[in-house]
Each structure stands twice: as C-alpha cells, then as structure tokens.
Length: 304
Image 1: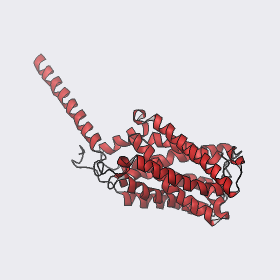
Image 2 (image 1 turned 180 degrees about the horizontal axis):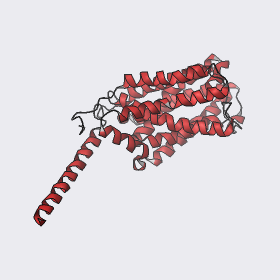
Image 3 (image 1 turned 45 degrees about the vertical axis):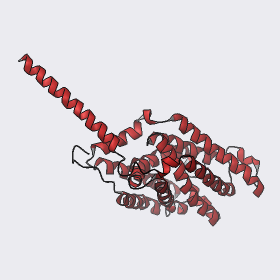
Image 4 (image 1 turned 135 degrees about the horizontal axis):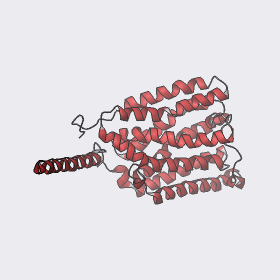
C-alpha cells in the first residue's frame, strides 16, 4: 500500500515499451541517413531513452514505495551478492572459451583467444568507444531493470518474463543494423550473422535475470555483469562464425541455469507482490516514527 494513494502501484508495461521504442527509434532511424559523427550523437540520444522513460515512470507514479525501490536497486550495495556476480562473469568467460574451442571444428583459429586492438564500431575513436560500451551497460540496465523487467515480472513468473523481455530487448536494437559504424551494421555482410545477433539476446535475457534476482533485484549487479560481457564480447577476437556457435553454447548454459534455479524462474510467489516487502517496511518505519512523535509530544506535555 502507498501512503499517497492508499493502494498498490499498478505497473504499465505496454505503455512503457511503446514509449521506449518510439523515443529510441525517433533518434536511431535518422542516424542511418547522416554521417557517422552525427549518427553517434543520435545513437547516444536513443540509448538513454529507456533510462529516461523508466525514471519518468517512477517519478510520476505517485508511489513512494516504487521510488524507494528504484533508489535501493541502483545504489543499494548491500543487495549485491558479489560472489554470484563474479561467478556469472566466469560462466560467461567459460562460454566464450568453449565457443572458440568448438569453432575449431568449423575451420576457425585459436588466434581468437587474443585481444582485439579496437572496438567493433567506428567513428568515435578508442576513448569514445570505451565510453560508449560503459555507458551502454549503465544506461541500458537503469532503463530495463529500473522499470521494464519488474513491470513484466509483476504479472508472471521469471521464466516467461525472461523470454518476453529477451525478445523485446533484442528487437529494440533493430535500427542499429542500418547505422554505419555500429557492430550490428557490420553483421550485414551475412544475414545469418544478423539473425544470430537477435536470437542470442533471448537466452542472454535469462542469464542477466539470474544475476538480477540473485542479488535481490539489484541494478548495480546487472551493470557490473553487463559491462563485463560487453568488454569480453568486444575485446576477445571471436569471428562472427564463432559467435553463432556461442549462441548455441549460451542456450545450453541457460538451460542448465534454469534447471538449477527452477524455484527462482518458475515460482509465482512474487506475482502481484514485488513491492510488498518494501511497502511493509515503509509502514513499519512510519509506525515507529509516529510512535516517537507521540512520545515526544507526551514528554513535552509532561514538562508543561
């Protein structure tokens, strides 16, 4: 229950996704028709839209509980299970290593275990690319975890939420394949590489949901993991062919994680109750404050 409106906050996922797609693509679609420098500015503007929409949804919600929840998810260091985050990063590194080894059967080289000199996208320089990868990790997670995932998860178990979110998150990137200098545009040399990119995002949705839930819905945990994944994907010299193999390995890893964490992904205990614990905590805190206020008032009256 919220102090302001006396009822639970109702998430609005359809409106959120509609606005996020609209406001992102308003910048990304024109970016395909301008030079790379102007395109980079438009891409950055589009990139921040999920975070902007998410923050606005929370701020205008009228829900003190939802606002407190967002704050705790972003700066709540106490929520992060660092052991799980580090383990998840090692799991992804193992996925990459297995993918490269398996790719040898398809004629790929062990040289893929080396580091690339540059990033996969051009037009912004090394420092700009480094900043872009970091910003992408931070802004995407604030946007998608700040409101999006919970807005779906509040109505269904996390297995179906992860599938739906993975598909939506994947398709959100669609205009990037037409923008010169992007990683996605570089995949256009082969339709299979493009398809693989969009398919691979879906099982990754499950893995990052695992990181999110294992740290009590911490955005900070997801930012650290997302950043590590981005840098591994960018700096390890995997070929596009190997990344197709990687998608198969990610799917296998996802199945294993879901089977091990069946209760996490298939439980319905949280449905309709995501904010209940925080709301109860707020009520308890307000009760204690009211009790202290009354005791202080009685103390003053006694003095009089």
